[in-house]
Amino acid sequence: MVSIKGVTAAYGETVILRDVDIDVPDGAVVALMGRNGVGKTTLLKTVMGLIRPLSGTITYGGKDIVHWKPETRALEGIGYVPQGREIFPYLTVEENLLVGLEARGRKAVVPDGIFELFPNLKDILNRRGGDLSGGQQQQLAIARILITEPKLLLLDEPTEGIQPSIVFEIENTIRFIKDQGKLSILLVEQYMEFALRLADFCYVMEKGSIVFHGNVKELSREEIKSHMAI
Ligand SMILES: Nc1ncnc2c1ncn2[C@@H]1O[C@H](COP(=O)(O)OP(=O)(O)OP(=O)(O)O)[C@@H](O)[C@H]1O
Ligand SMILES: [Mg+2]
Image (spheres, protein in one colour):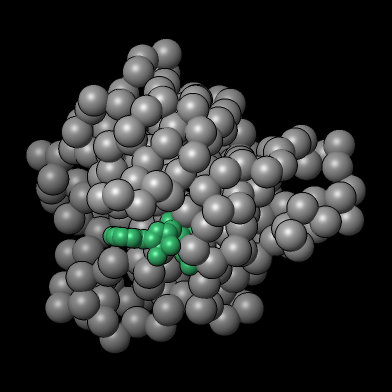
């Protein structure tokens, strides 16, 4: 689905990503883990086209997309749920859901299917985004992207600052989406157990480099943890 090869990226003079290789096969969930500030969000922004890498290639559906604008990537099926969720606080839940569809010139009706995945949202359609709990905002942020029917979903720390009951719901939602097999997911997480329960493959980043990667089924938790603890 997406193949990141030799990607190096910087903010001004400061190099953040160094020669990063990550492969997200069709229908797979790939976890990218690592401590605060190692470059995980920078990597997702680079895949979304918000940062232009200094070198390297990003191949999506067989095409090199490094020169594509973020809007083109979104239209071609890359969905990005940013860290911190970025819900519009003064728009209602329904209006937040419609923003993504309207940007694509689609009919301004929320498709019913989304409430099967997120039944909580149906009862709060008229609440303002800013009045929701962190967990509700996270569900809204994921729902807002899913209704645009992406092929690749980029999720940045969906469990950050969220109460355990909603983390559990989000885990079930991601598993349900995964089991449908239509979507590939690149999941950035620091909550390792959550990430490994969902992921097929995992990558560990340290100071902008991938220091370890492997097939989650073939690895022990201890082995993965030993690379996280550097
Ligand atoms: N807009 C920016 N300009 C300059 N430096 C930045 C910018 N955004 C992030 N950085 C720096 O780049 C490095 C990587 O940041 P990034 O946000 O990618 O890390 P992260 O792994 O996502 O961290 P966290 O787990 O805290 O979200 C950090 O040192 C950060 O301070
Ligand atoms: Mg981050």
